[in-house]
Amino acid sequence: MTDQTYCDRLVQDTPFLTGQGRLSEQQVDRIILQLNRYYPQILTNKEAEKFRNPKASLRIRLCDLLSHLQQRGERHCQEFYRALYIHAQPLHSHLPSRYTPHNSDCRELDWGIERPEPSDRGPMSFLAGLGLAAGLALLLYCCPPDPKVLPGTRRVLAFSPIIIDRHASRYLLAFLADDFGGL
Image (cartoon, rainbow, N blue to C red; front, side, top):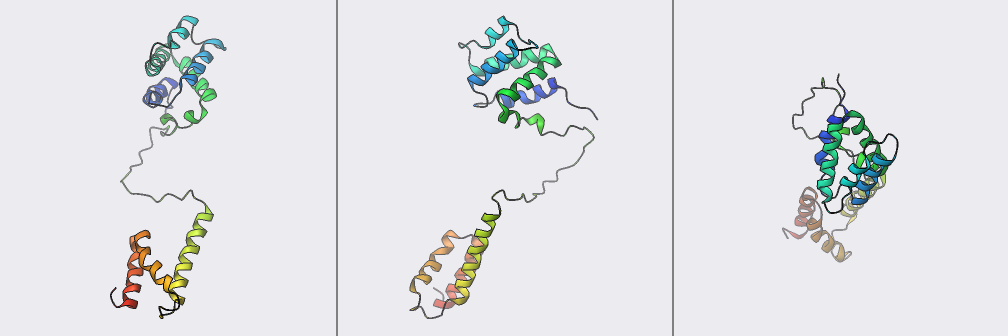
């Protein structure tokens, strides 16, 4: 089992980091200052001025910084990740290198089977959907066949297939077709 080095991770993360809108100008400046001013000093003053040059575009400066750190070695790449964690923690947690398997022996094949993902909406969403389904079922079960008793109910049920999923709309249309003799 081999672990990725920080230089390997930086090579893998470079397209993600240089993507449009990932890092702001202020975040890049803070990272450069962190690498320049704090121990261990990774960038010299001249290098820091070069990477903080406002005349060059942010993406070019960031690409130059990342390639410079890759050339300098493992310790420099490690300090970059430390600075990135300090100044852009949400971005650091979404880096592609953090989601790749760290062992090369893992040969799990993806056969393209879609696995259902658990809902992140919580139990209140489930209870609201269940209550809605139970309410519709109760309405359909208890609704009297006489249209004079609840005239608005038939109109609501007639237009609800437009809003409700196609599976539920089949049953509602079948219910209305039985009551009105084929709509």
